[in-house]
Length: 109
Image (cartoon, one colour):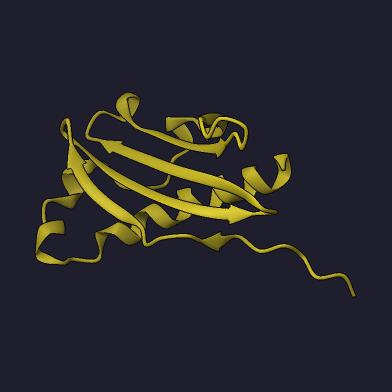
């Protein structure tokens, strides 16, 4: 049986608040390529985004690989994260979008 390559995390998920949005950023390695996942959630859906980028090994620049339209994102609007600073587990709502982005990356690499 052939072993399937796995998505290997290179760091812990980083959650932060910036420009009135909540962000989740995390780096992974897949098939010896570095990937960066960025999910931005805003109270206004159209200002939200979920993207995966791949690092170009020749110049280390991050290039767009795939995305999820904001209309298909599963993470909650940012006003739902008011308790994040107190350690409430709301960041788990980003996981569905992260998994969907990982599936996109696996199909394209």
